[in-house]
Amino acid sequence: QVQLVESGGGLVQAGGSLRLSCTASRSLFRFNAMGWYRQAPGNQRELVARINSDGSTNYADSVKGRFTISRDNAKKSVYLRMNSLRPEDTAVYYCAVVQFGTSPDYWGQGTQVTVSS
Image 1 (cartoon, rainbow, N blue to C red):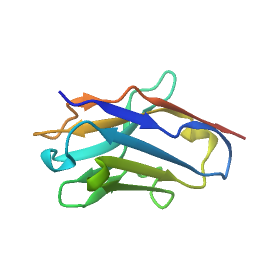
Image 2: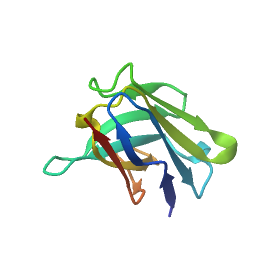
Image 3: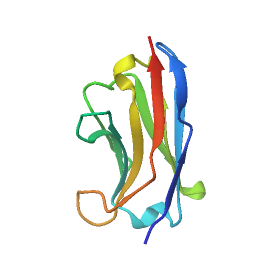
Image 4: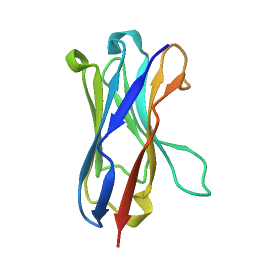
């Protein structure tokens, strides 16, 4: 079992920034990847950003150039820096761990991000 604790969500005006944090209960070296997903009301959960064990990253087209995912292995944490936020970024953001395969095995509880226009 892996526990994930997220923080950093909140209310921000369009154009603003937020940084989300996710701390895992186990070493990040055990995971194939960690990622951030989001789900807006009425929408499916979607991948926002992913950081793989080799340090490579993947982003949804809608956030490229605005969001940055990073990790700190010593702190067992992964971060999502979100700049130039837009109202359409409003969603619950979830941290996830891909332990062995390609799909998430564990999820955090989610943190709400609301961007006002």
